[in-house]
Length: 392
Ligand code: SOE
Image (cartoon, rainbow, N blue to C red; front, side, top):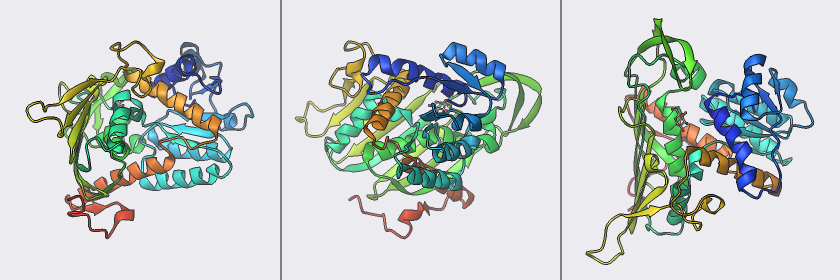
């Protein structure tokens, strides 16, 4: 594993726990943790459960005893590491968003396709697909439980940058992060739309805004945030990303991603309206899926609150008795378990780099649309297709 901050900790927890709760065909061995500083990596490895540390990831790629490389670094290093790892014959798991630019994502997807020919696999860490309530929503849409998808409504609301004194970090730096709310959290809801509806976003009209253009530089860091120093510097990414979209079927969708929504901590919400009902999910109540069945008897209709903690629900049987609930970290555990199973079966894990590229195309189109005063921009493969009215 490369990197050991927020995502590295979440992934380490997943690698430790997955084989203890899931009956896996292979046992992951947490062999090498790679970081820039030997001392800090050593301390992290001790705490997170890695056997040894290294500071040169390229040297680690040459080792025979390494099968899988887990990339938990900021986006500006994803392409270089992932492509080198795939070329060295190592399976790759890379954090989201897959890359900082569309060109990088295209090269990564091409490298993954070449590697797949010799059984080497690549996966992107859109972990929210593996929240049981989200996996249940996907299943219910696929089974036709809400009929034909007519409309999608997504929000991803956080507030950790709402305070103007929150210092700069790599997440506010375009060079490191690629974009702000758009790629960091907007990417998640784009992927969830693709996953739950089974349809890709085909065209967008977008608007990006940096609400707080300057912030204190950080003196030191603690978790996601840092301690403000006296110097100030520019924010080079968006704080807010808003876009409307059409799915492949022509169905309209609306997206809002922001880190400025005071009081909303991790409100990742998706609502899908179909011809026979609706589904709604909010990560702040992550064990619940709301379902409205338009075929229920008149007078008895209303949203049903499904507590997604029954053994019949996706992933839940491996955990606790009904009603005992899962948390943020379980998506990562499910991701690790599914990845090990796919590798053992010689199958492509999902989301693949092709799925990651599909999300990146949407992010890129939103940026292009924003620079073009919000005009509609199509995703290249849907260029020239008439989408209006297709979903009627
Ligand atoms: C910070 O905005 C962040 O940690 C994202 O980077 C994650 O992808 C998201 O899951 C939670 O918020």
